Image 1 (tube, rainbow, N blue to C red):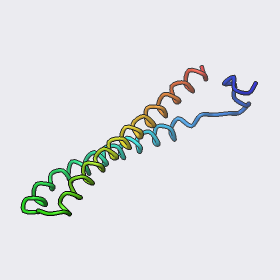
Image 2: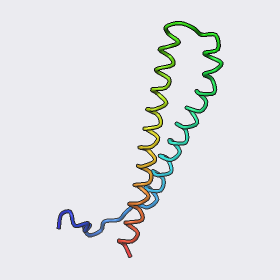
Image 3: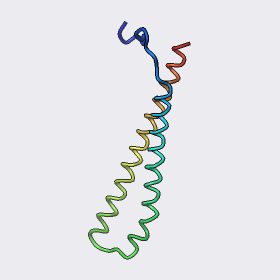
Image 4: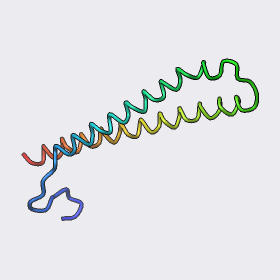
Length: 95
């Protein structure tokens, strides 16, 4: 019955692929956060003597990308969590 959660005969959940996918997504989250941390370390050096209109643009844009990266990292972490949850569901369903 469609939508009931029943799987066709011979259906098999690929637990290894799910684990690999979730791990790779988690690594991407970690890389994004490390990237932002490195950029933020460089901001004081880059902006130390920087004055003028483009400095203001930089300040606004840099705070914006931090928000965007944080949102992306949260979405990716939710995806990894969802993949792992589906693997648990599949394991329970196969019992």
